[in-house]
Image (cartoon, rainbow, N blue to C red; front, side, top):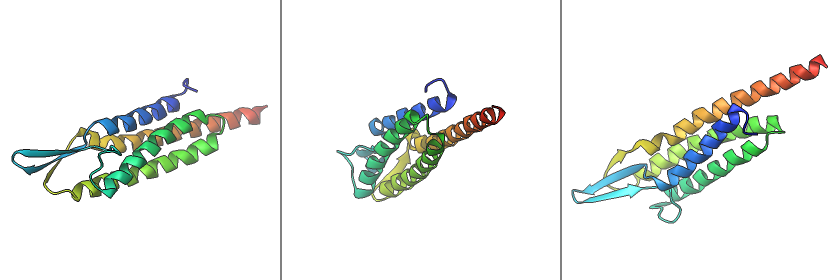
Length: 143
């Protein structure tokens, strides 16, 4: 399970998505003395878009771990990696749109690119899962 590189990619996706809960991805300068930090935390979501993004972030983290433990069904793993990519694209748009709803001057921080990194990692995981699947099929053909 953890011996393969795609397992590491999926584990990193889960860890990065979990980190997005604790770190603020943006802060808004509302007044000179007031700065508002935005996190993907279900309890402190400022609007409905950030609440949906928080739930989606948790789903992404759990989905990456689920894909990790489905190592016997590679076709399902590849399909779920595509869904993981789509969910990360939706997460980016929800984070951006939810942050635009809040007044002030937005300043994006480094955790805002975590979904982009997750997209790259999920596609790499899908590539290596397909590579393993092709290797298994060629070994079955030789027998």
